[in-house]
Length: 273
Image (tube, rainbow, N blue to C red; front, side, top):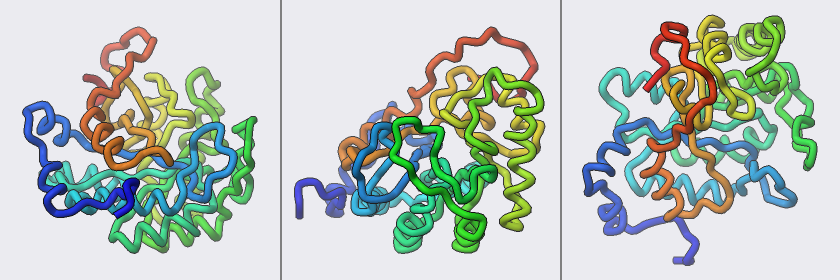
């Protein structure tokens, strides 16, 4: 077996079981993984690319531990029903075209699903919000429908990848409510999840997402806003071999940096420590 392989033997899988109180508490928290583009890496200044080969090995690592990747809506629903301890939330941001070509076949081969957070205002475009490039094509409307038909959850990443904190009310409405409506029209399915562009969220943004009718929203390190409308996730990239995934799984509950905003009691129910 190559040294870099993420596959494990049954004996090693048994060794991965939680042994300490800290480990058991950590693994009771929902673990959400954040991916972006899935293709062979060339220039990657923002570390948003994972190769199909590496993604397959990461999925093998999850499966070897009895874990199954699912979309966020399914993860939250199962946990609310008292199940889902062996589920991991898989999310893919931005709606890159390579998700359909490279990620979906690997997900289906492993019996996994995932949530794709798309940008209905940029369908068929590219990631022009990344000034250093390289340019990566985004899914078209036809591609997005194919993703939904493959059994993947489609959520909103906003309309055009705009950071929500500090935006005016009209922009906030377009990025939250309008993007949800457009995605539902495109896919013919309910859109229940939102993902904050750049991972940035404040209380006003979270309230707008809730008021737009979403059931949940994903951030990165939302601090005191952590809750159903600011779920923390961990970035996964090409460098994440087995031991790095193990560490990230264990430390995930600690990813709650403070948000520099004064508290406003009662503004957002369910979002807090």
